[in-house]
Image (cartoon, rainbow, N blue to C red; front, side):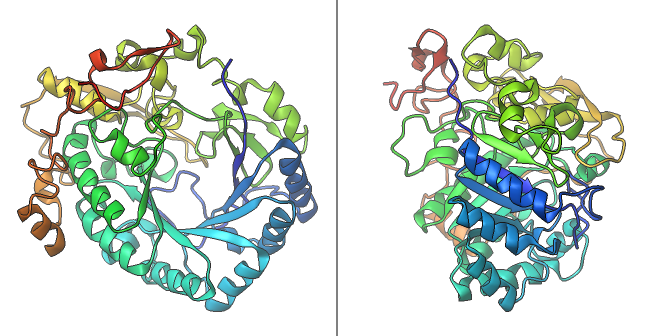
Length: 458
């Protein structure tokens, strides 16, 4: 029986936003029709506590644009749950930060998606980068711990090392990274999306930066569409953690997480498309009933049975890690192909195909409708790895576009983040006995149905 204990909820309390992000999956801007009233929101807080939620992150849109947002935050805290918040940071004054502290908001994540010009371009408003850093300084002054979240795409990826250094200097304690995928506005701006083959140049860079971050006391949290069984999996998901299960173990939607939309719609994960994954609305059913009785929140319950892999197709269906991975992030797969079960953003997949002399590209097939949390559909083009890259793709990402700063260049000369250190290069033990990941021979069976990656395969 799959273990299930939903303890974490991400709650979009309004869709209203003061930015216009090119990659916004919810197409935030105006409020939703029929957003929950204050009374309904406070009752939902009570229900979350009753079903065992222990932590709630408030998001938008922009959460602080809802007039009663601090009342909601205070209610969450008084109900015994940890209240956090994710924000674009545009407009959080020092006084607002003080009020956040008084309301019990325990931690904040500020979105930063590039250096100033890139961030402002992606966020759709000049000055948004400066406000993000101003907000961090206000949070520091009032004593609220803060981290950052960063979308990785073709615009931000070349600046990734410099982004880290700016965030480190701003005082973050944690950094969540996530690949941009084609949902909402990003489905319309698909040219900024990384192509699957570009992951081969992306992940050595990420690994090198993450190694530096940990050495400098910054915890990096890999998003659910980052990694999957390449040579850097343990670094990305478990550095400093003694738990031997520090690697991707399948979609947790409806198992440990919950997503709530501003009109009361309930999903197993906040990122999942609304139309395909909404289990019900708290105006019609109790939260407990929706969690326990709707298939949209129970589709992962068969993870340890044949049902756990019955939805897989394409590469994921034949992958050696299928029973454990279950197709990676359901959200990522669905927004690419309008169904889950075949994830193109997989490092192991890209490495396997490269070893066979092939690569994949995704191209748009069906346009998105223009609704919040919507998606179109893409198709996969498989081609020889040495095929010339299309000329009409000026944003093509490759290693030579990475903007390394002086600190990183000096560390490379000293053997850190180079082939000699085993971090930051394609040659760092991919699919080998030394990597302990990507080699089926060093993955013992666990309860005959699941794989466990051993700490040592020697």
